[in-house]
Image (cartoon, rainbow, N blue to C red):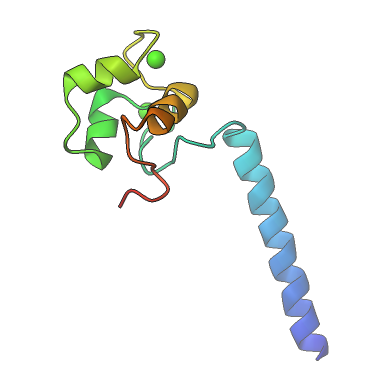
Length: 93
Ligand SMILES: [Ca+2]
Ligand SMILES: [Ca+2]
C-alpha cells in the first residue's frame, strides 16, 4: 500500500512537471499540434501542413493563411477547422 502510494505520488509529480513544460512552450497551442508543427516554431508551413493533409493545395493553404505571411498559425488553423476548410487535427488521422 505504501509502495503504491509512493508510486502514485511520483507519477503525479512528473505529470505536473510535464504539464508545466508544455504550458510554457506552447501556451496557446489548442489547434496547432506538435504532429503538424514538426520544427516547433508554433506555425505550420505549407510543407508541414501537407504532411498531415496530403490533399492540401497551395490554393487551399492561401485561403487558410489569411494574413498571407506564408505560415498558418494557431488562430488561422482554428478558423480553418471551424469553417470546414481543414479536418480537425484532433480527429484527423
Ligand atoms: Ca513549423
Ligand atoms: Ca498566417
